[in-house]
Image 1 (tube, each protein chain N blue to C red):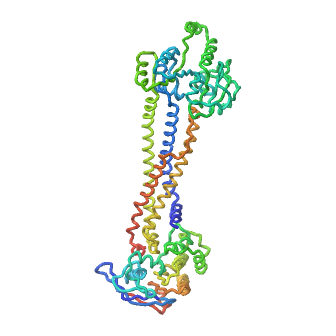
Image 2 (image 1 turned 120 degrees about the horizontal axis):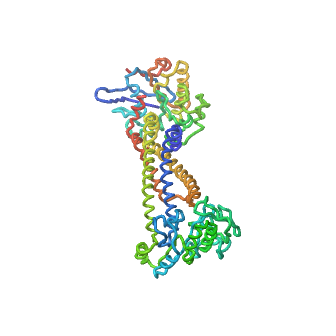
Image 3 (image 1 turned 90 degrees about the horizontal axis):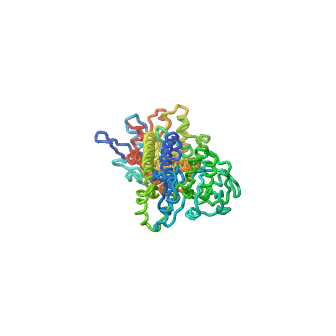
Length: 406
Length: 209
């Protein structure tokens, strides 16, 4: 019955209740969304980073190098000679060097030239088909296969650059050798092929260039073995490598060495400022929702003073009525919370679609976060507090006078 | 059987009330008449256990009620008394039916829908049970408050100016209903009013001045 009265009271003041719930919903949704996004981004970033101690590539922004080589989102910093990188890989501290060569795409999915170690690094499993063996054979990440509809045995032409609008290398076609299973890492969104394939495609392409360019190119042809790659992922044998190698490379070579862990931390610090700001905004909105519950109850209690005195005279204890009023605040907070969490999930789906289109970056975790449990407790506390402040007057209500006055 | 003797009460030192003694048997009606300022409402609130008298006694079926703690008074009021207030107030968010059932609920009794329907039928507002109380007319509201006072089958029914806002026709109707219903459940009925229209209807009366 108490619950019924609370519920009916909420329905009775639809606009007021709607406002309270709306504000609560917005606040909760924003915080919840930030929690989800933050967690998933961190998960993704952490997963892709695991095991990669250092990235070497052309000089430029270290963050850009990390983003392009580890996460495949930014543009590469430029090309470096494979021989230079191999020299570094000779260092006894280096356990493994995975070369990466990019520059082409298929329907905006990056084509990355690499070797078997890259697959091993991600522990990628084949869903169908096999590893590329010859030039111009390619292996598709699961997401690529899903979205492009390519199957083993199909052929496709790559386009130059990293955007889908690039010039098409029409005359040479890749053949799909295998498709990977979902790995929940960047590899899902890549087309992988051998380094040779990438080199070959561009030689073919350069063959059609104008003569002047061709002449310039011939000079390069002289030192043919100086193959270029975009960057290389390095794993160290021991943490000792972290101490000495990056500085050495940055100071004494044309290459740049960047440490993913440091750059990602830096990135999150930058993002963190924005996230913190938004979280404060959301907290303020939740607080305003609490105030609006307070104002709404305070006003309605003035109107309902006689009603309360009446119920007290009919046998209700003050505590019972107090709890009934609390229940109104709690119900409003509860609705706000549930609606907020649902809204944040809708937001995640929308954002995920956007990210997927732009960066092939998929966020889809829907589980309740631990942060949201704190959020739930917080929302409830605000609801209770906002309802308790005006309702405490019920303990001071003079039944006889109130009934006599009106 | 309601027996009241030598009740006194004061809000402050200047204004002291002392009220006449009376007794009212089951199925009987007592009219307490008085003009404004004679302490009618105070008297009623004393009888309703909403105020505590300085001295005197209130007995219902030989049980003393005058000096209970507020908590006990609330409980006894809910069980033994049915009160009809001057202005009909309800829990505005609830329907007529729920307002009736609320009387059961707040007195910690089983919610008797049959009782509510029976009362609504005999008081003639059965078709209004699902409506909000704010949509009812003054006479309809008054009949619903009578029904609410009867929900817990009290031994004593107290009515504060039950007819002051009603026209002659409705006044007649409401008083008859009150009397009949009180007789039906075997309760004593005490009506506190300044309404002179009621003066000649009852033989058993006290005049405050």
